[in-house]
Length: 77
Picture 1 (cartoon, rainbow, N blue to C red):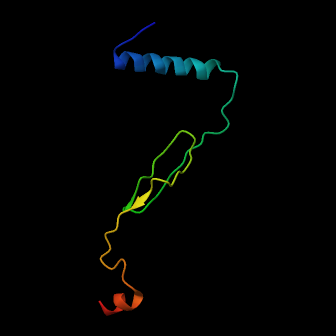
Picture 2: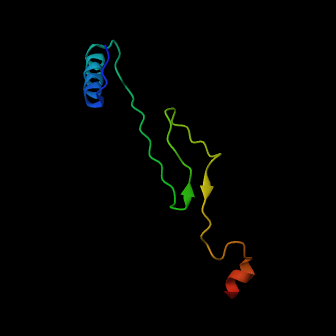
Picture 3: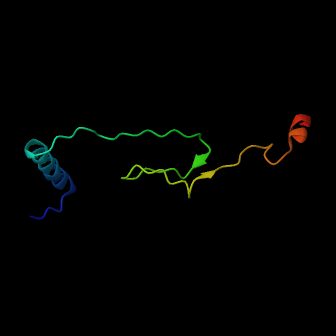
């Protein structure tokens, strides 16, 4: 069976999913749902199917004008 129309294919997938849920020999006891919160200046956080939190590509925008100043310099500004 082949379907090129995205809307029709999506409808077929929904029907298949309903059949699997109705006739599957398993009971879903747990559905993992996660929420992630981050400050607005944090970039590169993403979701993935395994719900892992890779931080290798995470970056923080530096918009603070006092960044890089010592505490003494900050107090004098």
